[in-house]
Image (cartoon, rainbow, N blue to C red; front, side, top):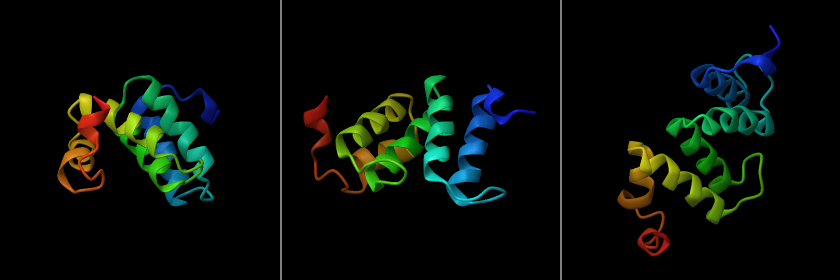
Length: 101
């Protein structure tokens, strides 16, 4: 099967995880974000959160806090616990999130 034809968000996240972790594929952050983006486009809060982390840490993309927070907000709006924790609970944003909304 051609990997590019995978349309299920859970399978797309699994592909992203494989590339992100180098598990069953060579580690490739650009491929990881490609797969996470495909799932995020379909509304996957997990994928949106993972993309936020990658922007926040500059993995496979240029580090960009604005992009990171935009993705975290998308995930948090769906109730994603880790995104909510990142935005509100652990001090990453130094209280800046409220100014974004």
